[in-house]
Length: 229
Image (cartoon, rainbow, N blue to C red; front, side, top):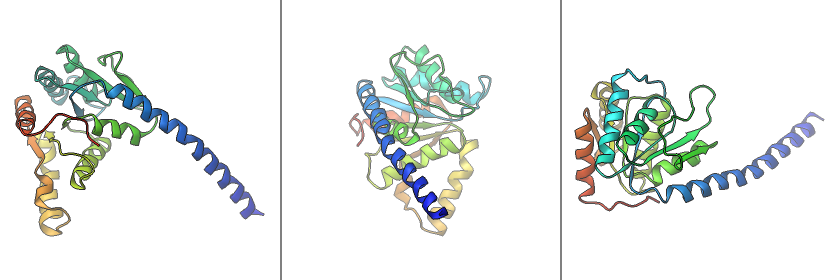
């Protein structure tokens, strides 16, 4: 009897999952239609918990301003903290300011610096991450938590496996990233051989907004500006 009840319950779950396909498709279609018109952009990632008086908030704002001065737009996750700083810098610089929002239980809400026609809402993380990767010409990664690390390592994995074209990944803040990068080099690379040295070629560790722009400009002297995938 219990096994029959479990089977009925499982069949109901599978039916609901099937209908979710249409919502997922809708998020992809809306995202592709809006994002395909934004032009070359750079994504800025970092903690939603970073306050306005934090030096990395201020640095992210300055980096975003320099990015739009260099002819790119800025994409963020659309929320508070570093995301807000990125959109604020792009907005103040008169450039494209895109926000890819997702509903979260505690942290996420739209920031006021996103262009009104470039604010997108997502329910699914994986759809949102496709938009970041497909329509970014580079990742600027500020100090952050698990979500920031997830986005960083997914991008590295996709480049490593040739699923997307290469683009620069710029880690900002030596004090924050140096121990992680030392572990990657000493443990993943040297001790266990789980990656190759060339996997790290596109990762740059910097501390200033000018260094960010130098990395982007150096890369795109040799590469075309175009969507991935």
